[in-house]
Image 1 (tube, one colour):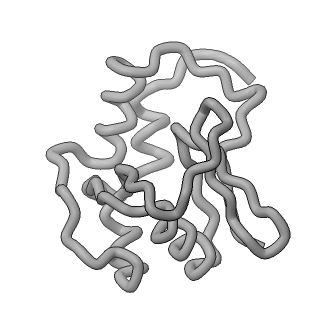
Image 2 (cartoon, one colour):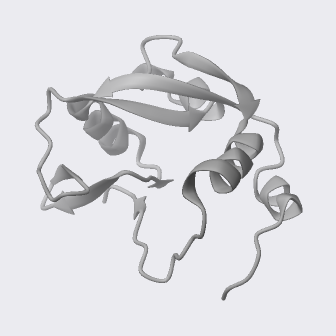
Length: 125
């Protein structure tokens, strides 16, 4: 399916006016979060795979990221409210809602999207 993404569609898929927060987390903290929550999440900028009972995270160049590497993680503010065990700090609250952040990203940063080959969803099993 192709075509334009409208602002209305973005507000329909993200209607709750959640805020956005950026956290600094180590790869180990991200892995613990993914394992511990059992929830599925969409992501970008990295590759996440489950290998047996472990989670492996790579950068876009195929380099496996060690557990002590720190990364910026942006989420809507509902996620740390529900999973507060994994978010020990307050994070850096952003000015835009999650829907506004998506719109800004599409209009100013990313450009044309092609998800036909995309596999950016992870859920620990």
